[in-house]
Amino acid sequence: MGYKMNKFDPGSSIQDYLVFGEFGDVNPSITDSSTFTFMTPEKMEELFDHEIEGCFLYSRHWNPINKYLSDALARMEDSESAIVTASGMSAISCSILQLCGCGDEVVASRTIYGGTYALFKNFFPKVGIKTTFVNITDLDSVKNAITEKTKVIYAESVSNPLLEVADIPALSKIAKEHNITLIIDNTFSPMIISPIRLGADVVIYSLTKFANGTSDCVAGAVCASSDFIHQLTDINSGATMLLGPVLDSYRAASILKNLHSLHIRMKQHGKNAIYLAEKLEELGMKVFYPGLKSHRQHELFNELMNEGFGYSGMLAVDAGTTEMADKLMAKMQENQFGYLAVSLGFFKTLFSSPGHSTSSEIPKEEQDEMGLSEGLVRISVGLDNDIAQSFERMKKSMIEVGMIEEEVPV
Ligand code: PLP
Image (cartoon, rainbow, N blue to C red; front, side):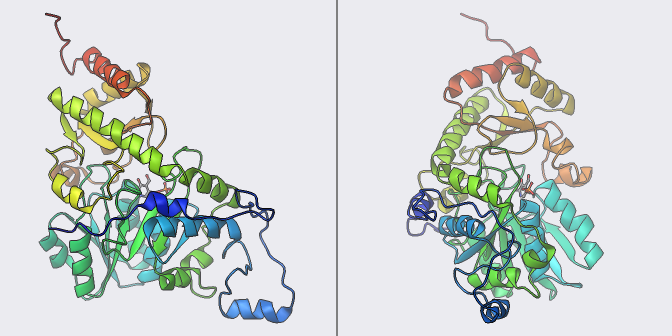
């Protein structure tokens, strides 16, 4: 290994991104228009021909506030450019459809978000795009799955829900050797991992999650080279322009404000998550968390991560059976440990059972093969001020459902 590269602080990168409103407002104005005026017909014609910096045509193409949020994300990722979209799923589908046509192939990690898995497995074949799913931690299986038709390698930097870590530099090397595009979904680890710097070509975000952090909207982003973002927004052939998943500008404005506290939030999510992961491991539970020494890719994660943002707020714990997982989740909600809900990256703790919700699209035999146990409980650890108290609530729930025994005072 030995990937550790020059230090990068995505938090400071965003901090340095200064934009003002028309009157010097400290938050830029919200674009409240779908269309824009031109001084002359010639200028309008010119814009149809090629993009002109600072000049806007129609909000589905670009608008100022979406551009500000996109630029801030590009800074955070250290990518040349970025574009925000109406959801993480549209960021994924537009990127794939821009790169692949009928007859082309994708090599994808089999431990990806269930919706992405379903998109690749069930939907893309309808337009002639075939996906081969592989164990992304086995680089030989990635190489062996590549054919002459492969256009994309697709993985999550930290996978949903098993928290497997993708060796982005090694995947990038394979992608470059075969002249294919490496797409990394970094939804679980913003700030912590910078995939572009590690060799990815395209970075996807579901901004719905940590990046926004308030679970009040659905949004996505693609960070990549200027060339790729131009391709996506091309008036005649761009997937975001023509399929039209435009992010509402009011939402873009609120996400931009939340993005400025992401560095603090990621630190607190990570601090709370490692506390819970260690305590649960001490109780003898099977815990999946990349910050634990017992995690198979702990060392790799250490090599890839930016310093100072922790190991993310996502952890998974195996409750053994579906029945036990269900009982535990109901009890944890009752004992105010958090909410039984899908999604992640919220300021409150959220938990769900991936085998029966977000990953339910993955066939049972494939779930078994990848170690996705039916009793797995995925926890998105919140920003709790007193995580020791939260752990006590979780432990109380575990005792009440009979998962662990009550300690007998000595
Ligand atoms: N990528 C990951 C890793 C996710 O967890 C999700 C949603 O849960 C998505 C993409 C899809 O994002 P959205 O729900 O914003 O469309």
